[in-house]
Image 1 (cartoon, rainbow, N blue to C red):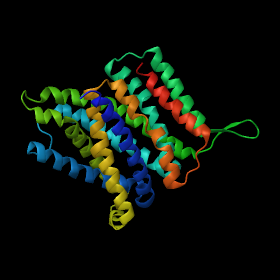
Image 2 (cartoon, rainbow, N blue to C red):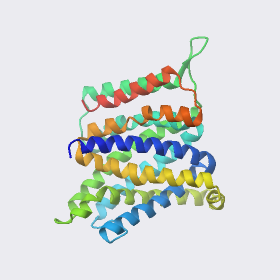
Image 3 (cartoon, rainbow, N blue to C red):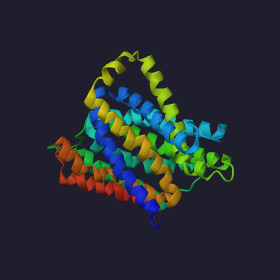
Length: 309
């Protein structure tokens, strides 16, 4: 099918938009840590059931130690660190601005790829970084009456947003390494296992994320809060939908998209979430959206696209 990779990439952007909206609701009702624990456990159940249905095994087949190591590292950086920051950013600055900071992921991935994989950074990449940062700055900075530049968002929320973008970018590079090892370990003739590799890779990442969040919850002695969380019907509904559209569909399809089209095209289309989320955030949450914020979001996405020209 022509343009299947591009279609999948746009589907991912829509999926992540829905995820962000539900995750904001769930994080504010349940708490960011509780939301992440519930989401990781639910995603393991969904991914395990998918793998079992198609391959006969609820755990990834043929993944060797190197694949498990790198994908687990990806889960640690992308889920435990990145998503912890992301969901806290939803509480402090909302999903719309939280997703805006996720446009930092491609620049971060480019830098991580340079140091970890020896990938080159072109002038377009440096220009893309500058344009992306400019777009974010236009959206989150204000000029006061004394002509001083100031943040119009809580600093804590901004720092969480930056941490989320960095975690996502580094986690993506680690996933690329892990999936490379995974692909070569699959025997010839196992087409179904190969086709489901994105879901299996997401499962491995989710294992690390779940263990990590549970360890954090144990360290903070917050296990008792889970009982309260599961009784919150609206919060749990939001958690279920954030799981279905996020680590189950969105993340798995994002890994699948790069198999059918160029990584640059896929990354650019998937980065449209900060633009897609503007109208739903205004409609469902009543958030005031200024023209400057819309322009800033569009400029950030343009900056992402420059990485791949």
